[in-house]
Length: 106
Image (cartoon, rainbow, N blue to C red; front, top):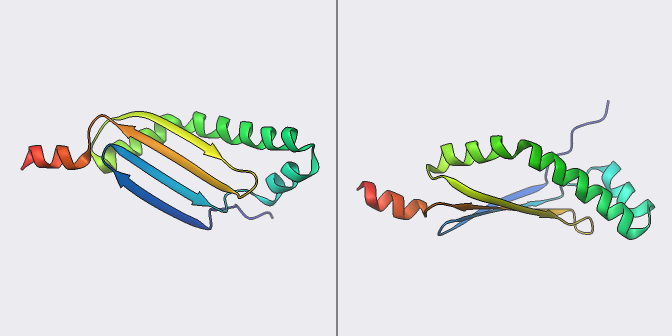
């Protein structure tokens, strides 16, 4: 049985109305092999396209989770993955900064 791959390191940064999530070590062994075995651009593009499609499919769930935790509406989500470093970044932009919202409530 193949074990599920999980990121080796996850960091979350809050900056004003942005949430940046940096994940390291996200590629499975199969994805690493695809990225290496096919011509560079084909392997890279296949892995990136597949990961992009998976994230776009789960976008509504992810946005709802962030909104629930932070308490601010998500305006957009941006993402990319590197097949060279195995690193992924996800950026959420929000309608307002959580600090601004918190200050209004006090």
